[in-house]
Amino acid sequence: MSGDRYNIHSQLEHLQSKYIGTGHADTTKYEWLTNQHRDSLASYLGHYDILSYYAIAENEAKARIRFNIMEKMLQPSGSPPEKPEE
Image 1 (cartoon, rainbow, N blue to C red):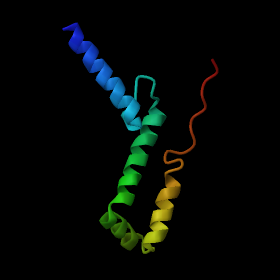
Image 2 (image 1 turned 60 degrees about the horizontal axis):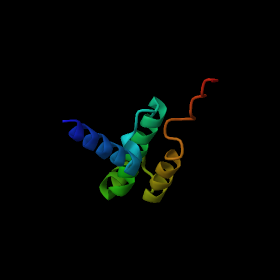
Image 3 (image 1 turned 45 degrees about the vertical axis):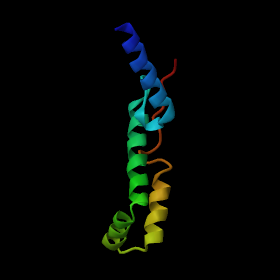
Image 4 (image 1 turned 30 degrees about the horizontal axis):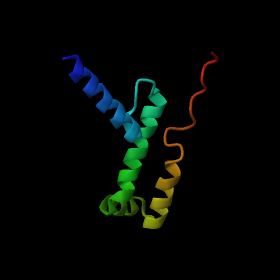
């Protein structure tokens, strides 16, 4: 029983080290939200049809939409909150 618990815990740690978006115990709300937004924006860039839809909806060139999305990926949730003094 305890061996299973250790195995699951080690698998979770491996998953969290391999994929940043899965988070960990010390992940803040801001970091989690930023990861979610970046994943969404990357998906929009990766799917040609969605990118075309945005270009038509905004009456812009696909290259301009791609550029705007790439810029949003820098700080998708705004600037990070200030950390409290310890």
